[in-house]
Length: 144
Image (cartoon, rainbow, N blue to C red; front, top):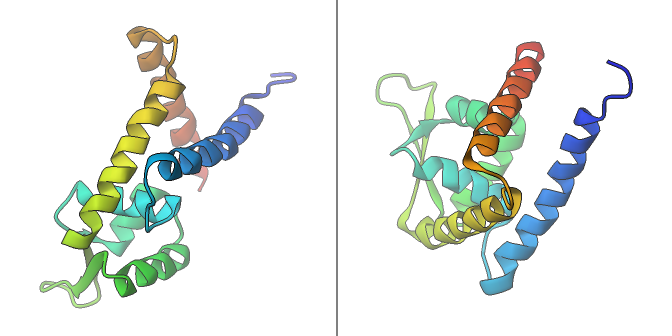
């Protein structure tokens, strides 16, 4: 495996993708949340509520990083936090109605990013590519 640059390309794509994503989010609207907060709200919008630990796993974030971001979202009124009725050690997080416009901005931006990512790709190529990325992620996750 001499001179392989896949890891470097993934890193470069990650940074460039973040910049393009932020530009797109700001181009047509004025979002009140940043890219990372939008991702949290987007993930939370898929379920009625999630534990902080499950959210950490879904976002691949440390608990300390996520907790401070959740605190800001909570103070801004975008999420609610409640103790689990079955286990008081577990905090459950859910979106509020105030978050819905921000989630829609995020969803629209995700859709635009998918069009950019997959321009000139066939459906078969997209499926293969995503399978390869899933395997890379699994390899990294096993070590983490």
